[in-house]
Image (cartoon, rainbow, N blue to C red; front, side, top):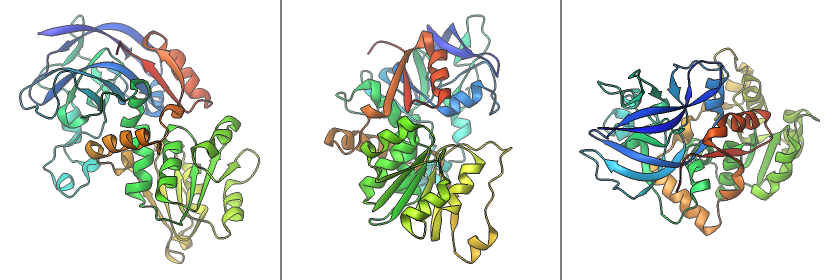
Length: 368
């Protein structure tokens, strides 16, 4: 059996998304069929649309979504029809070395679990297969997701903002709390104040950081930074961010987080560290952009630079916890969403995202 759905399809890159009718299968073993309500627009999607990162059209983009379970396949007991769920691209097998040692984001079988089954699960009306990005493809009325690619959340959560839990919040919060393990009293700088960056700022506040310095070039984002927990801001258009951070802290920060996805800003994150500090790269840096660091600072000052994929998350635990933080007023989810669009106008949403003015944009894909 199969169902006809409407989806936004990237047929060529660089290009725009085309609103088309597709056919989606019923869930097979370990699969969950979800009716999507809202999906967040991520810079990784934008970079596939504009050709910065290679894609494999035709493809349905989108990976952070919230919706309700329609049906489940054999082997699924974690969720049931009617449950509210959030998707996350950190699908994992649960049995490989990385999974059993608590590093699910590095699962060696992730790509296999995200790939198509023996026959296409999502296709055009003429039968041509369409790839759902990360095994999710959230810019569609319904999606088929592996059971380890989603998690149930409380029904009373606001769906409009719940979608950002699956990527932006998980990435930013996790980088601070998991990847870097920021300690009470330490100093933090966050370069790039988008959805991921502001999630990192809030996580640093929760961790008890003594100074939290937000760095950006957009005045509106700098104005919002204090509301999210920043103690200081640096306008990188007006002053050198490395020198400004050093002036604010005296010796540099214990932790710098890069959320832009640029080799240049990753280098800045490393340069603004104090001796023994750690720079954590959260953004997706194109292969064409090298990250330059001074070798002497690595061995004489014991500075470190590390990556953080999706916040080194344990999203089955993290997402419900972050939803609880939001309920307690410890995490501001609603304020992360600064613009909205419909599925039919999703290209306008990505145009707004590319401008750099918005924090996070969500698309209303279907009825709640």
